[in-house]
Length: 511
Image 1 (tube, rainbow, N blue to C red):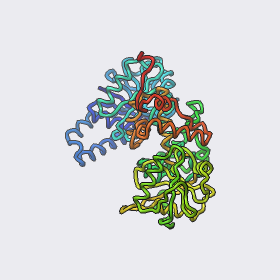
Image 2 (image 1 turned 30 degrees about the vertical axis):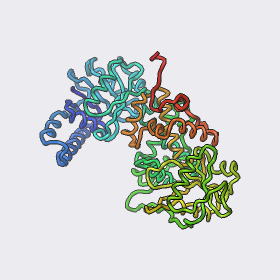
Image 3 (image 1 turned 30 degrees about the horizontal axis):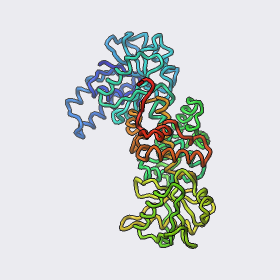
Image 4 (image 1 turned 135 degrees about the horizontal axis):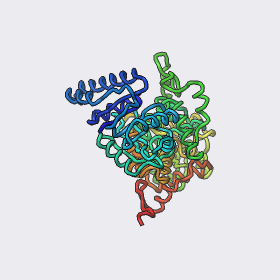
């Protein structure tokens, strides 16, 4: 296939390298000739590196470079061009101008694709004389390594174009997912679940960014915590995406932005690229403060209280503490000197204290989610005795014959940190599925590739169980009264019907 790529920036040159390596002839052009020269040099250096590392032969490198054709004029006639991929700056006016000029220069048979990440594909196509020839082809940076592409049909796109683009993408070795033309498409939309909830936790002073990041990594198993991720992406970019998706979905509660971001963006606290975001960067930046040492008494007696419906979680915690050598009390209630640990699921420690008549100063929450790493989370209420909290932390840090557990101390909130992050990730993905933005079978692989999560969000919820996830969502909603936690129809129906969260189920069309 002969392809023309318009725009020789980071995305354009990545797409060019990927397509030429896969055997396609690629015309690379830009309104700035020097950008094309720099892009070809960059691709050459990437191919040289691949040869040095043994991932490509010298002959394949040479053949790939022969297929990469620098083009002086983006609007040149191209009777053999079958596909154009636009990768210019993210501006509606710029993109519509590009396609308008291409429409006059290229045959009617040439398919147009836009690499927009946030603009409406239908809106871009509407400026064409023939809007049926355009679709979205959304790549992720760096293109050769991020093996996922979103195929986005506009409202007028001809029905044969998405399957043809899918065949092209998969023929080049990437996974293609077809996504509705909605704000954020699939992957950027799914990513709002993590960062919006992390910002909400920070708003509520549940923990500092470093606390929330450690829990996200060590309990949920994420490669990066949400605040580290925002600093890497750039808070200016993240905030704009959050706002555009929230506005595009008519101010949906589940996608609600935080008041914390506008002032930080205005102040230039964008993250790595400005030297300071949620963390400081650069040679002059101070090191991140280490976690406070464990100073309490690990031998203090501990009583595990089981709130209604949490008997299994309480038994598991009791068994783990007993195995570590902790002085675990038995019986119907704690002794006068014991610290009380409560496994909470979508509820708060404060509510357990009130419901169970527990001693406020000595009662703390523990997250029962199985940790991906060696970290436990201790939740403290405003009524907590600091000395008792230090002892509870020491008890949780114990381990039988192994490295001690790290223990994060956070403010009491419904569900604690990891549960709220996971509940939001699953809820946002469930909303994508129930709106038919993407098929359930595409959501999980797209998110694991695009966002690097350990599991796809629907599969992740299924590991917990549909019924237990529904219980978590209901408890969060009931405890907080915040509509952002309202259970989704997708999770509710599957829990009630005994279906997996990954199961698309029966539709009226099937009947």
